Length: 158
Image (cartoon, rainbow, N blue to C red; front, side):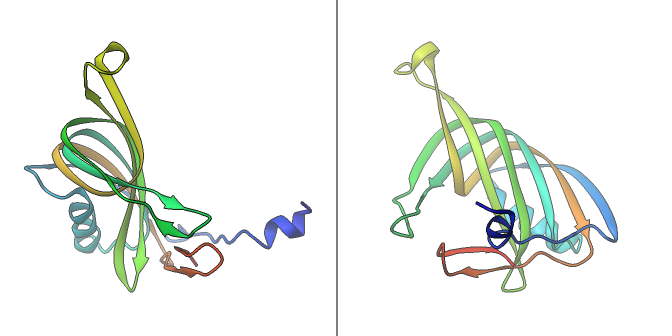
């Protein structure tokens, strides 16, 4: 692919022209992680952010997207103690509301797996916190907004 072919498929903009703010906190008590991060965004006037997550969950729902059929596959729901091995995501605006997008890798004890530990990872549609720590970096300036990207069928950043 030529540079112009590549760049015709790339959209980007500077988002931190007014600075950055960093927040660190915890989510506990069976609270929905997506809702907690969305409420954090509202309470601190955050429209664009990235975050990292560590800790434990009571349950998580993973979903995947079939790129060829452009449809969501059936969810995988894990209702058991889960340790977040790696967690990251973004906050942007969708219909002028905070949209929290999370990807996680989680481990769990299960004697059917080598060394008694299983792992699952991917896009998370729902997660219930046992004890989650987060570091959230807010990028002040022009917000990132999501809109339908017809070629992929996904709501991507403008």
